Length: 265
Image 1 (cartoon, helix red, strand yellow):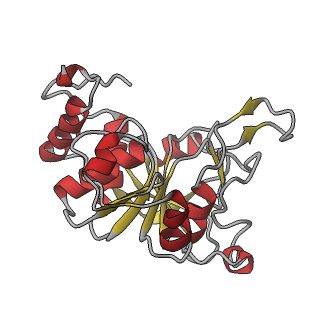
Image 2: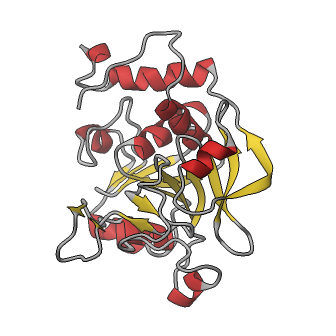
Image 3: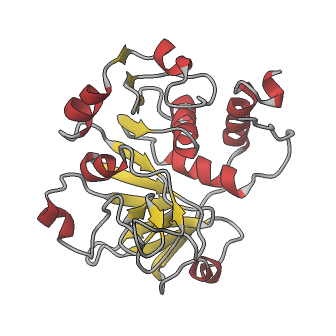
């Protein structure tokens, strides 16, 4: 992976705004279950800036990792070297995740529907002969089921925000109110979906995802245009704070320190 750091003073990109917004959501969390990519970046940034006691838990078995740069995989040595403990993968799932001991789970998605159900398995009408075969589930179904709450990070477009996912890899709210309880899922489900346009949250009655915040310069019409269903918009829609200079500098510093980046050479 090659990361090209941005020059100081360069305006924040949509991906940087999205990552910083996700990091802010971890201000009061005690623990977060993450993989690599934007969720990991957001969690590391949150620990640096707002929540030094935040415990980063990776699927590979590291608990309390404190990386000083962005890990290249869940098996990156920096995670084990800086962790409070390294345990087996079965222990991570059987002892920490499934009993609900993790506060927040971060997930991505190839497809997402109006009830927060995630597809990372196949695109197309059949599993056996899909148009595209995706990486698959990994630990995502259990993260979605058992973390006390879930945050989803995904780019917003009609390709990813669909009326019905082609395959339910990880259950959000199923078909609506009561489905999680019926299925025996003990976590609260997706509480926030953070996109490159804004933030969606479940309606407290219907559990349908509702636009509650947009980033500066983004309109509700843009968000609706990037959604494959008739997106509900909150009457109290917020314009979210842009990244501060401190947040942007810290994020770019992480990127610059990552092995393989131009800033680390």
